[in-house]
Amino acid sequence: MELEVPDHAPAVVSLPLGATEPRPLVVATHGNYDRPEWACAVWRDIVGDAGFVLCPRGVARRDPPALDDPRYHYLTNQHLEREIEQALASVAEAFPGYITPPPHVFAGFSQGAIMGVAIIARRPTWFDRAVLVEGGFDRWTRANVTAFAANGGSRVLFACGQWDCDHGGRRLAKWFETAGIESHVVFAKGEGHTYGGAVAELIWGEWAWFVADDERWAGSVGAPTTALPVGPRG
Image (cartoon, rainbow, N blue to C red; front, side, top):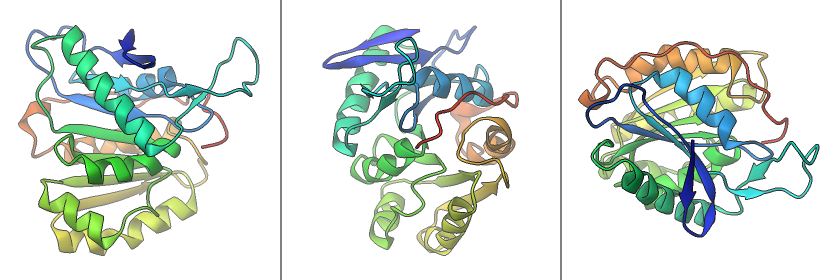
């Protein structure tokens, strides 16, 4: 469903059907030339009905493929940070008592992953773990890895469909290990720049590890997604 967000375009929120008690939340940011509806659909398949999925919309691009095919992007990581902050307040107001307190899960694809690294570093109380898909692997520094760990950062999963993402994520493993953060990298060779299809299946396959130490996700189940039509640019 659409969720009104003050001073921003409506976000998309996907609800855990059948929830009668508080559930955890994933904030899923899309890529450039993309849509929040697509991101929410993929992440709903991954987490099943174990949690909420909140997908900030960003700003409409002026060059969509057609008038009835709008595409979106995020202007800067600071703009995205403010949008996430407002969206978190809106979803908590819309579903009082149904969302567990932070930290939440951050999930980002391409532009959303790239900008997400800076946001995670600035907002340690929001997120304690992150899934970065096809982006963000070149934005970590030793300083923000250390800061993320010091403020409760727990796990990072890099999910890739291209070689540079796989190589970049594996290059960071020692930094995360030294800081006490667990990290995994999964690579769907040949899948390309996407978060659907085989990339999403690999994320789903890592989900039990990713949330293993967070009892709020106990019993989390999902189903591998099928590929969605993701814009070619990230």
